[in-house]
Length: 411
Image 1 (tube, rainbow, N blue to C red):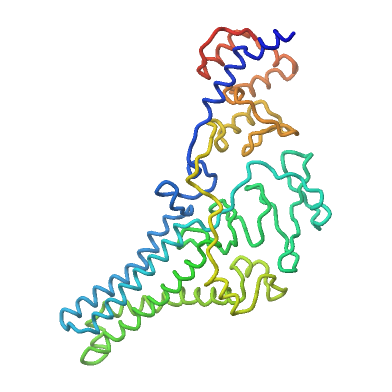
Image 2 (cartoon, rainbow, N blue to C red):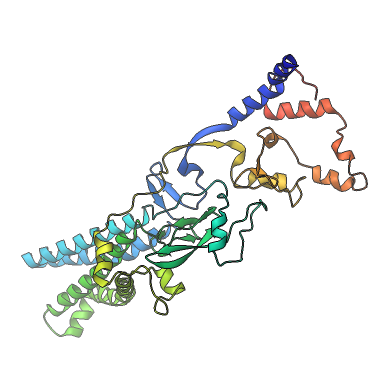
């Protein structure tokens, strides 16, 4: 009996399975297989959002008037080379470089993306009694009961945290899932289309500096463009007709300062009350107590003096990936083939059935095309589909598909 068992263990079928499983695994960087909608540069060192192309528009809207103002100052310096003109030009260049620096530090930085889970968390019976929510997570394993909402204590206050069906985790307090970038983000504030990135715990300070420096740049260009007009001889209207460039800068900056200036004032209010934009629009802490506020001074100190959190994900680390387990391509063929609605594969987890069994790697290489049509033809004879016409032909087709050479093994 033991001899027969050893023979079966070393059979060609088991060696084929081992070789196929090994060949399907390959090492790749995490950013190359990340399921979010982010865009990466420099080998995963720079992380952008899905709409990172909007940075070109933002760069033009900032750099256009700023460079125009610097060119205007250079033209004035040709006529009157004074220390005042040099200082004004230097101030304009400095604010422009500062503004662009904070812009790219905001857009090209990990905002605080929370790592995804590859499988559902284990059921915790204690959370069933503490949670007031009667809504349960609709997952592929009915035996596992997970509440949609859990209650956690924050600074003596009860805060509800929700389960994320995409990331398969309970979001930490103040975290939320961005539908644009498809990530859960720590202390999620909002997704800013102008910087093409989520604003979260790790780039919020740079976002504040970006909008603040943009406001200062608008005020700076607006003010000194007026000084250039008023410093010219003759009547004001005559000077405006001759210096059209300064008039255009004054008009542009007057309109722009209402947007960036208003946004800066709004976020200063949020900082003073220790809120995020998401919380301000959703929870309305003016109607109920804010569990995060510590007072105006302490709230500003928390933002300006606290250390920026370390990233939770190393997008450059090596991970093992299976060729046929990428996204939805593997599951779509199987689900549309012979798997019923109660036995569909979990696309993200690679499991099936109520017990969450692992999908065998050999089955991933089989061709199930046309089985659905075969089922329709055999409605009156349901058991005939399990009897292949030609065993040898079927197995040889399978071997040629997976690229396995070896002795013929009769099934």
